Length: 194
Image (cartoon, rainbow, N blue to C red; front, top):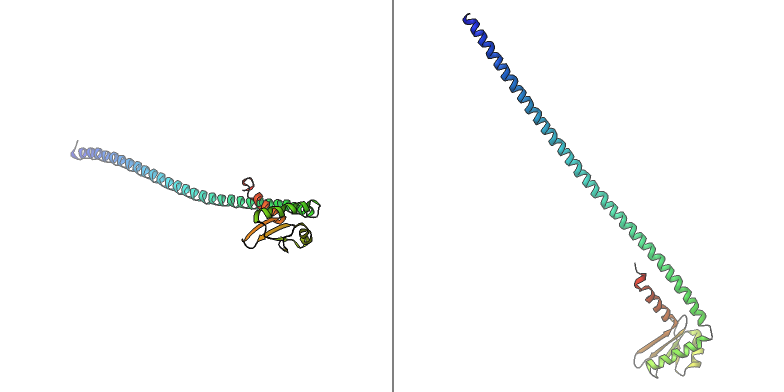
């Protein structure tokens, strides 16, 4: 065997070893590239997922805010409607009572009411006072008292007011005031509040 053959055999072995080493390095590099590509893909997928979650959270926040505003608006509208309806019922109720008081002021029992009111005024204010009455009641009240009687145009339903001008005291025994006080007390009841 010649030197050429020996070098050719060794060159072939050397070439085979280099090819094998190169194939292994190529396989390793390919594997590293695939791993990096997979890692980059995972990172990209995780980033995309993170972005999607952030977007979903932001949209959820927007919709939650819109939902809360709509609920608040509906609650306000409902409360407003309930209050308006309640006020209408109360107004109707007290208008009915007002009508009954107007009828009472035309009855025979009204004279007794005026007598009791004059007696209360005298006990509250003493003996020196002026009686205030509705124009329709002036003659009737004059017959029931010896005190000066004046017209008070603010008295619409009936009853009397009494004024002690010396002491600056006033007693209100009008049906108008009684109705107004009852309506105010009625609407201030805790059971009727929203």
